[in-house]
Image (tube, rainbow, N blue to C red; front, side, top):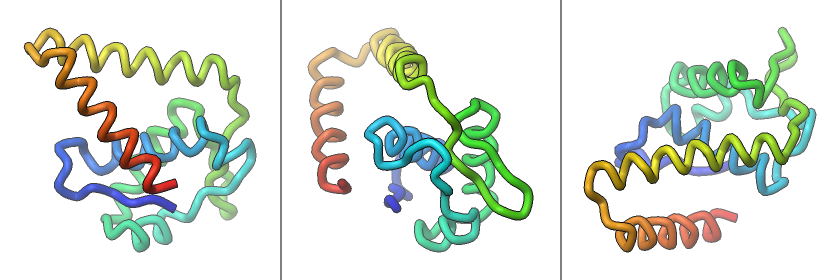
Length: 123
């Protein structure tokens, strides 16, 4: 489904969260699509099942996915405009934090460009 950067400073559960949100935003995952089981995703990404479970819990808490006991986790109906707005608000907050810590805009642009290339490679 996707890969995880085990050397990243971003916690693994957040990477999983972000990857799933990205798959929803780009249309790879649609409403009511089933996500891999916690064990299956943990095995394919090489991470602890508790870490995947934490990401799924956050996704569910934020209304991105829903769970059906005995069946698994599924993509919730999304108001894509609201969903995109929330993602961009999170991005804006992260950029503002970077500015507050003295990271220059050019460094952020380079970072965004490299993430874009990585994203395109994965898809």
